Image (tube, rainbow, N blue to C red; front, side, top):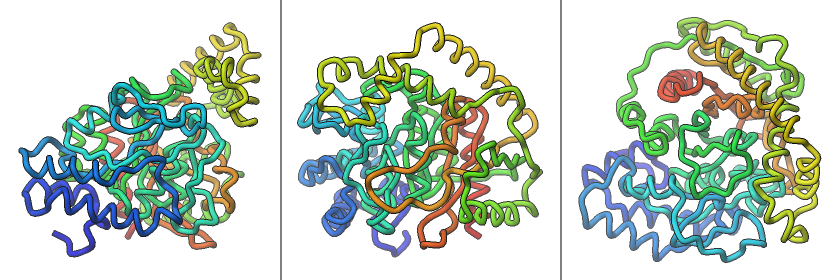
Length: 431
């Protein structure tokens, strides 16, 4: 096994050593807890942490048979997902100290697969834009992104090898970009959402973070119940993909750092890709960014009806504004927008008859300075609206020394093929 500190190793390396009993889950958890103790006062990644309980879970795993593909791996759980043994507050004072009766389905699946839930990671308020205390581990004066801020920061700072997140606009891909880790948003509808505080039935997707594509493939094998992803994590043998270069209509909002990363990526991939060429989204789709915002506003206003009606004073001003806006949208208008979404999904889906994956920006640039906002998800909204699987690949740094990368997008339901292509692409981007 690699001689690096245990908390520095990738999840796929760790799980192999754990399965061979060359490494104890307790020792790995202790290494992660030591890192958390060293850095949590700076990063503030956790909403709840119980070191004694985490170590007890790890010891129990060491004493028994290998449980599954995540055996012994410490896992962070975004505080939007219910946990039976830890409080779940959804990033809101309204739910401070709440104790759910059961785990979210994805949490239960991960525990069944052998993961050790180390703690609850910070989320923005109800996974919208009002930030929590988490700072970017590369520079604590900058945002880690949101809403899965604590999960991305914990993985980036080597506190944990894996963490769960959710995305309704850009809440996996954007924090992965700002913190410099691999973020995976699966195809919409492929991961069970029971036990997750809902914002939008049409958009909400559970995904996660790791430090390599193999790591998120390992996590994805459990989230999607797809053994092919576990095989990819352990023995990636993939062919050169056909890559469509899709700057998207939002390209003018990309700053110099993202543009430089784009140029470097195309230079690196061109000699070896099966095919590489520019791709434009089909004409006649309208403004997909605005469509995503309106669908989200309508559904969030209704998903958070209890909070809107009974706890309005406990909500941030920005969230109250969204809820008020959403309540002005009629059911007829929403239905028309869902039909437009379905048409757009069909039109964009046809691009994958020609290309295996699309390469696109993840964020406008480096993580912005300040902790009062979480950045703009403009480069994520379209893909979330369409329900397509996405993976962020970090490989560059910007002018301030903060991470920069790009995302790959795949055909709906082709998560295995997307992550296989992502592994191939990432290896070449990293040089």
